[in-house]
Image (cartoon, rainbow over all chains, first blue to last red; front, side):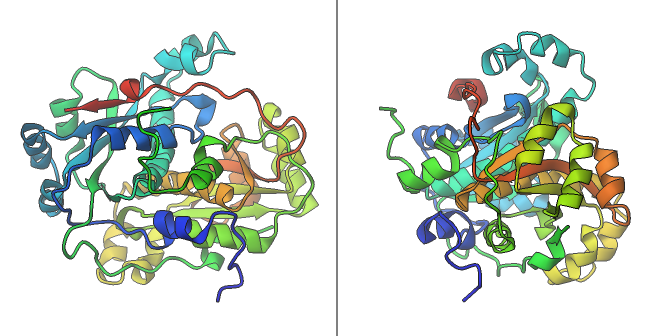
Length: 201
Length: 201
Protein backbone atom coordinates (compact mmCIF):
# COMPACT_ATOMS: atom_id res chain seq x y z
CA UNK A 1 0.00 0.00 0.00
CA UNK A 2 1.30 3.41 -0.98
CA UNK A 3 1.98 6.00 1.71
CA UNK A 4 -0.40 8.32 -0.12
CA UNK A 5 -3.34 5.89 0.03
CA UNK A 6 -6.48 7.55 1.32
CA UNK A 7 -5.14 11.09 0.95
CA UNK A 8 -7.61 12.12 -1.75
CA UNK A 9 -11.14 13.47 -1.26
CA UNK A 10 -12.22 11.82 -4.52
CA UNK A 11 -13.61 8.35 -3.88
CA UNK A 12 -11.73 5.30 -5.09
CA UNK A 13 -14.25 4.33 -7.80
CA UNK A 14 -13.98 7.79 -9.35
CA UNK A 15 -10.17 7.68 -9.20
CA UNK A 16 -10.30 4.41 -11.11
CA UNK A 17 -12.89 5.62 -13.64
CA UNK A 18 -10.97 8.78 -14.50
CA UNK A 19 -7.32 7.90 -14.03
CA UNK A 20 -5.94 4.79 -12.40
CA UNK A 21 -7.91 2.16 -14.34
CA UNK A 22 -8.77 4.27 -17.42
CA UNK A 23 -6.93 3.40 -20.60
CA UNK A 24 -6.48 4.74 -24.10
CA UNK A 25 -8.65 2.53 -26.34
CA UNK A 26 -7.38 1.34 -29.69
CA UNK A 27 -10.52 -0.52 -30.84
CA UNK A 28 -14.20 0.27 -30.32
CA UNK A 29 -17.55 -1.51 -30.47
CA UNK A 30 -20.20 -0.13 -32.83
CA UNK A 31 -22.38 1.05 -29.92
CA UNK A 32 -23.24 4.67 -30.78
CA UNK A 33 -22.22 7.69 -28.73
CA UNK A 34 -25.25 9.99 -28.63
CA UNK A 35 -25.31 13.75 -29.06
CA UNK A 36 -26.76 13.88 -25.54
CA UNK A 37 -23.66 12.09 -24.20
CA UNK A 38 -21.37 14.58 -25.92
CA UNK A 39 -23.43 17.40 -24.47
CA UNK A 40 -23.25 15.89 -20.97
CA UNK A 41 -19.46 15.65 -21.31
CA UNK A 42 -19.24 19.25 -22.47
CA UNK A 43 -21.56 20.49 -19.72
CA UNK A 44 -19.19 18.92 -17.19
CA UNK A 45 -15.80 19.96 -18.55
CA UNK A 46 -16.78 23.48 -19.61
CA UNK A 47 -16.35 24.44 -15.94
CA UNK A 48 -12.62 23.77 -15.99
CA UNK A 49 -10.68 27.04 -15.76
CA UNK A 50 -8.91 28.80 -18.64
CA UNK A 51 -6.87 32.02 -18.71
CA UNK A 52 -9.24 35.03 -18.77
CA UNK A 53 -12.05 32.46 -19.15
CA UNK A 54 -11.16 32.35 -22.84
CA UNK A 55 -12.44 28.77 -23.47
CA UNK A 56 -10.87 28.48 -26.95
CA UNK A 57 -11.58 24.74 -27.34
CA UNK A 58 -13.92 23.81 -30.18
CA UNK A 59 -15.04 20.34 -31.26
CA UNK A 60 -16.15 18.86 -34.55
CA UNK A 61 -18.06 15.68 -33.69
CA UNK A 62 -17.63 13.45 -36.72
CA UNK A 63 -20.52 11.00 -36.87
CA UNK A 64 -21.94 10.53 -40.40
CA UNK A 65 -20.36 7.75 -42.52
CA UNK A 66 -19.56 10.28 -45.24
CA UNK A 67 -17.77 12.66 -42.85
CA UNK A 68 -15.98 9.80 -41.10
CA UNK A 69 -14.57 8.65 -44.44
CA UNK A 70 -13.22 12.14 -45.09
CA UNK A 71 -11.73 12.20 -41.58
CA UNK A 72 -9.97 8.83 -41.84
CA UNK A 73 -8.30 9.90 -45.10
CA UNK A 74 -6.36 12.56 -43.17
CA UNK A 75 -5.25 10.34 -40.30
CA UNK A 76 -1.74 8.86 -40.16
CA UNK A 77 -1.64 5.29 -41.44
CA UNK A 78 -1.24 3.85 -37.96
CA UNK A 79 -4.38 5.68 -36.79
CA UNK A 80 -6.71 4.91 -39.73
CA UNK A 81 -8.07 1.53 -38.62
CA UNK A 82 -8.80 2.53 -35.04
CA UNK A 83 -10.40 5.79 -36.12
CA UNK A 84 -12.56 3.91 -38.62
CA UNK A 85 -13.63 1.53 -35.82
CA UNK A 86 -14.89 4.32 -33.51
CA UNK A 87 -18.57 5.31 -33.52
CA UNK A 88 -17.68 8.96 -32.97
CA UNK A 89 -14.50 11.01 -33.32
CA UNK A 90 -13.89 14.51 -32.01
CA UNK A 91 -11.65 16.88 -33.95
CA UNK A 92 -10.33 19.09 -31.16
CA UNK A 93 -9.40 22.60 -32.25
CA UNK A 94 -8.28 25.91 -30.77
CA UNK A 95 -10.19 28.96 -31.96
CA UNK A 96 -7.84 31.91 -32.48
CA UNK A 97 -10.97 34.07 -32.72
CA UNK A 98 -11.98 33.25 -29.14
CA UNK A 99 -11.80 36.96 -28.35
CA UNK A 100 -15.06 37.53 -30.21
CA UNK A 101 -16.81 35.83 -27.27
CA UNK A 102 -15.08 37.82 -24.51
CA UNK A 103 -18.01 40.25 -24.05
CA UNK A 104 -20.09 37.16 -23.22
CA UNK A 105 -17.60 35.22 -21.08
CA UNK A 106 -15.52 38.01 -19.48
CA UNK A 107 -18.17 40.71 -19.12
CA UNK A 108 -16.52 42.70 -16.33
CA UNK A 109 -13.72 43.85 -18.67
CA UNK A 110 -15.53 45.47 -21.61
CA UNK A 111 -12.34 46.32 -23.53
CA UNK A 112 -10.99 42.75 -23.41
CA UNK A 113 -12.14 41.89 -26.93
CA UNK A 114 -10.46 44.86 -28.57
CA UNK A 115 -7.25 44.44 -26.57
CA UNK A 116 -7.08 40.77 -27.51
CA UNK A 117 -7.89 41.48 -31.17
CA UNK A 118 -4.59 43.37 -31.39
CA UNK A 119 -2.57 40.75 -29.47
CA UNK A 120 -0.09 38.89 -31.72
CA UNK A 121 0.11 36.07 -29.16
CA UNK A 122 -3.57 35.26 -29.52
CA UNK A 123 -3.18 32.11 -31.60
CA UNK A 124 -0.61 30.67 -29.20
CA UNK A 125 -2.80 31.60 -26.23
CA UNK A 126 -5.69 29.78 -27.92
CA UNK A 127 -3.60 26.68 -28.48
CA UNK A 128 -2.29 26.64 -24.90
CA UNK A 129 -5.69 27.01 -23.28
CA UNK A 130 -7.38 24.56 -25.68
CA UNK A 131 -4.67 22.04 -24.74
CA UNK A 132 -5.49 22.43 -21.04
CA UNK A 133 -9.16 21.95 -21.98
CA UNK A 134 -8.20 18.82 -23.92
CA UNK A 135 -6.98 17.44 -20.59
CA UNK A 136 -10.38 18.20 -19.05
CA UNK A 137 -12.12 16.70 -22.09
CA UNK A 138 -10.30 13.36 -21.82
CA UNK A 139 -11.28 13.20 -18.14
CA UNK A 140 -14.87 14.11 -19.10
CA UNK A 141 -15.15 11.38 -21.74
CA UNK A 142 -14.14 8.89 -19.07
CA UNK A 143 -16.62 10.46 -16.65
CA UNK A 144 -19.31 9.46 -19.15
CA UNK A 145 -18.21 5.82 -18.89
CA UNK A 146 -16.65 5.96 -22.34
CA UNK A 147 -13.12 5.33 -23.54
CA UNK A 148 -11.06 8.09 -25.16
CA UNK A 149 -8.49 7.46 -27.86
CA UNK A 150 -6.52 10.71 -28.26
CA UNK A 151 -4.20 10.89 -31.28
CA UNK A 152 -1.53 13.29 -32.51
CA UNK A 153 -0.84 11.58 -35.86
CA UNK A 154 -2.83 13.27 -38.64
CA UNK A 155 -2.51 15.83 -41.43
CA UNK A 156 -3.54 18.98 -39.56
CA UNK A 157 -3.65 21.18 -42.65
CA UNK A 158 -5.67 18.60 -44.54
CA UNK A 159 -8.19 18.35 -41.70
CA UNK A 160 -8.45 22.11 -41.48
CA UNK A 161 -9.19 22.42 -45.21
CA UNK A 162 -11.68 19.56 -45.06
CA UNK A 163 -13.66 20.57 -41.97
CA UNK A 164 -12.68 24.09 -40.86
CA UNK A 165 -12.03 26.04 -44.05
CA UNK A 166 -14.00 29.13 -43.09
CA UNK A 167 -12.76 29.40 -39.51
CA UNK A 168 -9.72 30.60 -37.58
CA UNK A 169 -9.58 27.25 -35.79
CA UNK A 170 -6.46 25.06 -35.72
CA UNK A 171 -6.48 21.33 -35.09
CA UNK A 172 -4.91 20.39 -31.77
CA UNK A 173 -5.76 16.67 -31.52
CA UNK A 174 -8.20 14.03 -32.73
CA UNK A 175 -9.96 11.88 -30.13
CA UNK A 176 -11.88 8.67 -30.78
CA UNK A 177 -14.79 8.09 -28.39
CA UNK A 178 -16.75 4.94 -27.69
CA UNK A 179 -16.98 1.68 -25.82
CA UNK A 180 -13.75 -0.32 -25.99
CA UNK A 181 -13.81 -3.21 -28.46
CA UNK A 182 -11.86 -6.49 -28.57
CA UNK A 183 -8.16 -6.22 -27.69
CA UNK A 184 -8.63 -2.48 -27.05
CA UNK A 185 -5.57 -2.04 -24.85
CA UNK A 186 -1.85 -2.16 -25.36
CA UNK A 187 0.17 -3.11 -22.26
CA UNK A 188 0.25 -0.07 -19.97
CA UNK A 189 3.40 2.01 -20.28
CA UNK A 190 5.30 3.01 -17.14
CA UNK A 191 4.90 6.45 -15.59
CA UNK A 192 7.71 8.62 -14.29
CA UNK A 193 8.36 8.45 -10.56
CA UNK A 194 7.40 11.34 -8.31
CA UNK A 195 11.06 12.17 -7.70
CA UNK A 196 11.66 12.47 -11.45
CA UNK A 197 8.88 15.01 -11.84
CA UNK A 198 8.55 17.05 -8.64
CA UNK A 199 11.27 19.11 -6.96
CA UNK A 200 10.50 20.84 -3.67
CA UNK A 201 12.22 24.09 -2.77
CA UNK B 1 -33.33 19.88 -15.05
CA UNK B 2 -31.02 19.57 -18.03
CA UNK B 3 -31.74 16.94 -20.67
CA UNK B 4 -28.27 15.53 -20.02
CA UNK B 5 -28.88 15.00 -16.29
CA UNK B 6 -27.89 11.51 -15.19
CA UNK B 7 -25.96 10.72 -18.38
CA UNK B 8 -22.56 10.47 -16.69
CA UNK B 9 -21.06 7.43 -14.98
CA UNK B 10 -19.22 9.70 -12.54
CA UNK B 11 -21.28 10.26 -9.43
CA UNK B 12 -22.72 13.69 -8.68
CA UNK B 13 -20.47 14.44 -5.70
CA UNK B 14 -17.37 13.82 -7.81
CA UNK B 15 -18.73 15.99 -10.64
CA UNK B 16 -19.16 18.80 -8.13
CA UNK B 17 -15.75 18.28 -6.49
CA UNK B 18 -13.86 18.30 -9.79
CA UNK B 19 -15.86 20.58 -12.08
CA UNK B 20 -19.33 21.94 -11.43
CA UNK B 21 -18.77 23.36 -7.92
CA UNK B 22 -14.96 23.73 -8.08
CA UNK B 23 -13.66 27.27 -8.35
CA UNK B 24 -10.36 29.05 -8.93
CA UNK B 25 -9.30 30.34 -5.50
CA UNK B 26 -7.86 33.83 -5.09
CA UNK B 27 -7.11 33.68 -1.35
CA UNK B 28 -5.89 30.82 0.83
CA UNK B 29 -5.76 29.87 4.50
CA UNK B 30 -2.37 29.13 6.02
CA UNK B 31 -3.19 25.43 6.41
CA UNK B 32 -0.18 23.63 4.91
CA UNK B 33 -0.27 21.36 1.87
CA UNK B 34 1.93 18.38 2.66
CA UNK B 35 4.45 16.70 0.41
CA UNK B 36 2.31 13.56 0.79
CA UNK B 37 -0.68 15.41 -0.62
CA UNK B 38 1.34 16.56 -3.64
CA UNK B 39 2.52 13.01 -4.13
CA UNK B 40 -1.04 11.66 -3.93
CA UNK B 41 -2.12 14.20 -6.56
CA UNK B 42 0.79 13.22 -8.81
CA UNK B 43 0.15 9.51 -8.32
CA UNK B 44 -3.40 10.07 -9.57
CA UNK B 45 -2.83 12.36 -12.54
CA UNK B 46 0.32 10.67 -13.82
CA UNK B 47 -2.00 8.10 -15.42
CA UNK B 48 -3.54 10.62 -17.81
CA UNK B 49 -2.42 9.92 -21.38
CA UNK B 50 0.22 11.87 -23.31
CA UNK B 51 1.50 11.45 -26.88
CA UNK B 52 4.04 8.60 -26.99
CA UNK B 53 3.70 8.52 -23.18
CA UNK B 54 6.15 11.43 -23.13
CA UNK B 55 4.94 12.93 -19.79
CA UNK B 56 6.90 16.19 -20.17
CA UNK B 57 5.24 17.94 -17.19
CA UNK B 58 7.57 18.85 -14.33
CA UNK B 59 6.74 20.66 -11.10
CA UNK B 60 8.69 22.86 -8.74
CA UNK B 61 6.79 22.83 -5.46
CA UNK B 62 7.64 26.16 -3.82
CA UNK B 63 7.24 25.83 -0.06
CA UNK B 64 10.06 27.49 1.92
CA UNK B 65 9.56 31.17 2.85
CA UNK B 66 12.82 32.06 1.12
CA UNK B 67 11.84 30.36 -2.15
CA UNK B 68 8.30 31.76 -1.98
CA UNK B 69 9.70 35.26 -1.74
CA UNK B 70 11.81 34.69 -4.86
CA UNK B 71 8.72 33.31 -6.63
CA UNK B 72 6.42 36.21 -5.77
CA UNK B 73 8.97 38.70 -7.14
CA UNK B 74 8.47 37.22 -10.63
CA UNK B 75 4.66 37.19 -10.55
CA UNK B 76 2.59 39.89 -12.28
CA UNK B 77 1.46 42.59 -9.87
CA UNK B 78 -2.12 41.34 -9.87
CA UNK B 79 -0.95 37.86 -8.87
CA UNK B 80 1.56 38.76 -6.12
CA UNK B 81 -0.83 39.00 -3.14
CA UNK B 82 -2.72 35.80 -3.84
CA UNK B 83 0.50 33.89 -4.53
CA UNK B 84 1.96 35.18 -1.26
CA UNK B 85 -1.19 33.99 0.56
CA UNK B 86 -0.93 30.37 -0.66
CA UNK B 87 0.80 27.75 1.48
CA UNK B 88 2.24 26.04 -1.62
CA UNK B 89 2.69 27.06 -5.23
CA UNK B 90 3.55 24.80 -8.15
CA UNK B 91 5.69 26.11 -10.99
CA UNK B 92 4.47 23.97 -13.89
CA UNK B 93 7.03 23.40 -16.61
CA UNK B 94 7.48 21.42 -19.80
CA UNK B 95 10.73 19.51 -20.10
CA UNK B 96 12.11 19.69 -23.64
CA UNK B 97 14.53 16.92 -22.63
CA UNK B 98 11.66 14.49 -21.98
CA UNK B 99 13.17 12.19 -24.61
CA UNK B 100 15.92 11.19 -22.18
CA UNK B 101 13.27 9.19 -20.30
CA UNK B 102 11.80 7.42 -23.35
CA UNK B 103 13.79 4.19 -22.77
CA UNK B 104 12.00 4.03 -19.39
CA UNK B 105 8.50 5.11 -20.41
CA UNK B 106 8.26 3.87 -24.03
CA UNK B 107 10.40 0.73 -23.81
CA UNK B 108 8.93 -1.12 -26.82
CA UNK B 109 10.49 1.40 -29.22
CA UNK B 110 14.21 1.40 -28.35
CA UNK B 111 15.14 4.01 -30.98
CA UNK B 112 12.56 6.56 -29.74
CA UNK B 113 15.07 8.56 -27.71
CA UNK B 114 17.50 9.05 -30.58
CA UNK B 115 14.73 9.86 -33.07
CA UNK B 116 13.28 12.45 -30.71
CA UNK B 117 16.69 13.94 -29.90
CA UNK B 118 16.92 15.00 -33.57
CA UNK B 119 13.33 16.30 -33.75
CA UNK B 120 13.18 20.12 -34.04
CA UNK B 121 9.53 20.05 -32.87
CA UNK B 122 10.50 18.57 -29.51
CA UNK B 123 10.10 21.73 -27.45
CA UNK B 124 6.67 22.43 -28.90
CA UNK B 125 5.65 18.81 -28.34
CA UNK B 126 6.77 19.13 -24.73
CA UNK B 127 4.73 22.29 -24.23
CA UNK B 128 1.62 20.79 -25.83
CA UNK B 129 1.66 17.61 -23.78
CA UNK B 130 2.58 19.40 -20.54
CA UNK B 131 -0.43 21.67 -21.14
CA UNK B 132 -2.73 18.65 -21.43
CA UNK B 133 -1.15 17.36 -18.20
CA UNK B 134 -1.81 20.75 -16.59
CA UNK B 135 -5.50 20.05 -17.23
CA UNK B 136 -5.15 16.72 -15.42
CA UNK B 137 -3.20 18.41 -12.60
CA UNK B 138 -5.90 21.00 -11.91
CA UNK B 139 -8.46 18.18 -11.72
CA UNK B 140 -6.10 16.24 -9.42
CA UNK B 141 -5.60 19.15 -7.01
CA UNK B 142 -9.38 19.33 -6.66
CA UNK B 143 -9.52 15.55 -6.22
CA UNK B 144 -7.37 16.08 -3.12
CA UNK B 145 -10.01 18.41 -1.68
CA UNK B 146 -7.83 21.44 -2.35
CA UNK B 147 -8.39 24.57 -4.41
CA UNK B 148 -6.21 25.37 -7.41
CA UNK B 149 -5.36 28.90 -8.48
CA UNK B 150 -3.76 28.62 -11.95
CA UNK B 151 -2.13 31.79 -13.27
CA UNK B 152 -0.64 32.88 -16.59
CA UNK B 153 0.65 36.29 -15.43
CA UNK B 154 4.37 36.05 -14.52
CA UNK B 155 7.85 36.67 -15.90
CA UNK B 156 8.58 33.28 -17.45
CA UNK B 157 12.22 34.04 -18.22
CA UNK B 158 12.77 35.40 -14.72
CA UNK B 159 11.28 32.27 -13.16
CA UNK B 160 13.38 30.06 -15.40
CA UNK B 161 16.60 31.84 -14.38
CA UNK B 162 15.60 31.78 -10.73
CA UNK B 163 14.49 28.15 -10.41
CA UNK B 164 15.39 26.21 -13.57
CA UNK B 165 18.70 27.61 -14.74
CA UNK B 166 20.40 24.27 -15.38
CA UNK B 167 17.47 22.59 -17.11
CA UNK B 168 15.78 22.51 -20.50
CA UNK B 169 12.44 23.16 -18.81
CA UNK B 170 10.15 26.05 -19.77
CA UNK B 171 7.51 27.55 -17.49
CA UNK B 172 3.97 26.82 -18.66
CA UNK B 173 1.89 28.08 -15.72
CA UNK B 174 2.04 28.78 -11.99
CA UNK B 175 -0.61 27.22 -9.76
CA UNK B 176 -1.39 28.15 -6.17
CA UNK B 177 -2.60 25.25 -4.03
CA UNK B 178 -4.35 25.29 -0.68
CA UNK B 179 -7.59 25.63 1.23
CA UNK B 180 -9.63 28.63 0.10
CA UNK B 181 -9.42 31.64 2.41
CA UNK B 182 -11.87 34.51 3.04
CA UNK B 183 -13.53 35.95 -0.08
CA UNK B 184 -11.70 33.39 -2.20
CA UNK B 185 -14.03 33.53 -5.19
CA UNK B 186 -14.87 36.07 -7.82
CA UNK B 187 -18.40 35.76 -9.27
CA UNK B 188 -18.38 32.82 -11.65
CA UNK B 189 -17.91 33.77 -15.29
CA UNK B 190 -20.31 32.37 -17.91
CA UNK B 191 -19.34 29.41 -20.09
CA UNK B 192 -19.94 29.09 -23.81
CA UNK B 193 -23.04 27.18 -24.84
CA UNK B 194 -22.75 23.73 -26.35
CA UNK B 195 -23.88 25.05 -29.74
CA UNK B 196 -21.06 27.62 -29.71
CA UNK B 197 -18.43 24.96 -29.16
CA UNK B 198 -19.55 21.69 -30.77
CA UNK B 199 -20.48 21.14 -34.42
CA UNK B 200 -21.73 17.72 -35.50
CA UNK B 201 -21.07 16.51 -39.04
